[in-house]
Length: 160
Image (cartoon, rainbow, N blue to C red; front, side, top):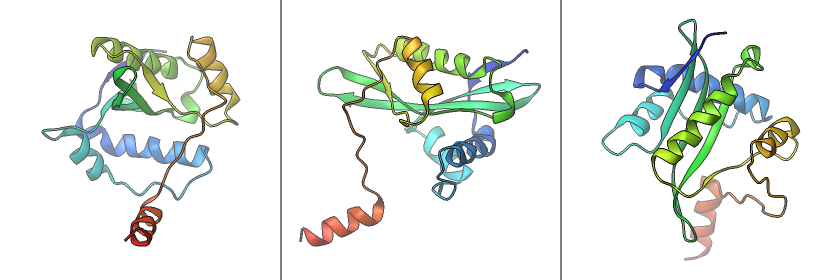
């Protein structure tokens, strides 16, 4: 199968949003996505973009994407965080995911960072095995911590 990995353009964001929604459904969080294609366009393509996105295109259609951004590690300095990598379900197993993954790692090396990091769900054994085989370390002793908007508001209100 022929496909092309390229940097996303603003006009790709509706397709990217579809992939984000597909990932949310796969991760059993179908109602969690609240952003719009317009949010993605604004945040990814303005004067100070918040992220970089790569897309996998086959037969003129976007079939996969990888979205990443810079973070700062007090131990390593500038790093790349891979937020999401998703390939449409009917296109999995054709090499698109591996090519997107490779492009993110290449991007990190181009940017001179010392680490690329991401989070994978513990039940996603297929992804965990893939990442381990690629040479990545899949930690079992670190927990992801998040605080949603409502919890932030409550915390700040209680802290006054």
